[in-house]
Length: 575
Image (cartoon, rainbow, N blue to C red; front, side, top):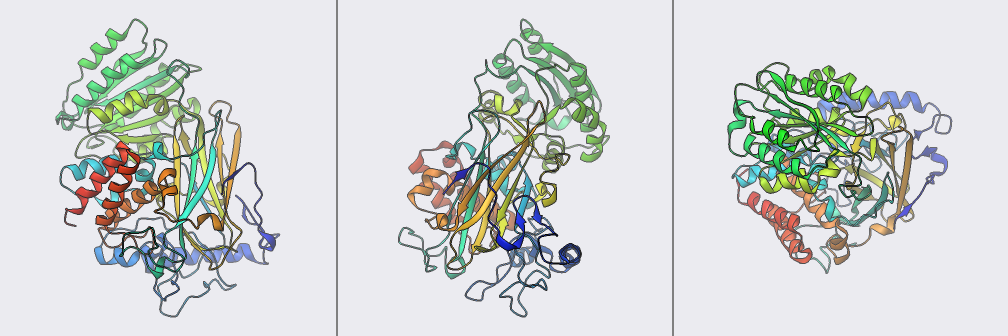
């Protein structure tokens, strides 16, 4: 069940309000000091339990333990924890121990005191694109490059979210149970080895946020784009600089006459190849500048970004969308190579002029961590292109959403009702977490979102047995891209709305199934096949491939067909 509009959650005597946490004057006496002790215990406990803090902890009804990050699998396989140190989930008793904990079980030393989950929105998709490229080459991606939210958000166009008429967001909240009520696979499920008693009380909760559809090219504001192009020696590999030149050539023809383009190239040094130039009758000049790009020397990415922003400021256009587009394999090896230090150099251009960064990754060897950090902290997003078809999608088909903005510093906060929710875990968004109390602090960085985008957050939620009524409230907050005026939109859901089957016909049409498959797939790649943490009993890769193949046939979706083929490649590769 979905409701939109402003909403004040029903929390009774607990003194909890959406987006505000537990209020000391309303909550139990001494709560602020207890919260400080809890946080200190969590930091100390993280050293001892490590992976425990990344997913839901506690015991299933059959006595089996399911921790927050699938720590058993991570310990056995030696892969790093997929989630942040900061946990989510309920407190239990007054002394901080969770209800139902048994002596000797793996659990958190001090569960948190609230039922809030807060994060900055993210529309990056580079992690999935790079994983797909790596698997096509017969290699498994490094687990550190796998970010579940980017796998999930790669299928935004498969979601059935309503869209707003103007700027801002709609909020859709729905979900499904991951097993039949008795813990069996259920009549609709032809697979016998996926779900059992451990999954009986678990649900997937999907929070879907959508912006308005992208306008036709003639209706959007003019764009002033500064392309910062890597021409280092590593870009000589087929599928790198040649792909970039081809992409820019096609895009130059697609842009409007009142759009402007500047070109900056960098190797060991950076230079402005073309100052900001209004297209109009100058397309030939732009093509000539693109044709001069040739690979040489090393990669001074810091110099490229710094010169790119200087060029963007020099060519700043009022009333236009001013954006820096970085095209690189991000294998920085000369000059400044630290993302934070690079961003410090361009801080004034970002803050004073609102120039955002769009990172486009290329190459079989790709500096994923550096590019992702630059985009996240540079008020932008990333994608990855591996071939001409990908490039056409990014620079032609999806150009408006990648250069225009409808929301700045967007954040989401989900308030879970302690009367109905026992445990919860946000899947992904590990480095996008925001302190609960900073949700309405507009000085705290959020995500920059364009038209035509959707953002999906998937939670694993353990519902209290027999619970009914209000389950969760989701709120999105953002700033108008021009006036910086804050806005909010809210949706909520009841517990019984999550009783439908995950693998039923309704969920296939809604896009929830592809969301679950993408999350399970990312979790499997990140855990090295050790079981993962997206749900207590995740499907095998073979089963996921079969699920995706069936869904692709039913929906006739090309992206889902591509996902099925990608999972199938992973099945046959050793860990």
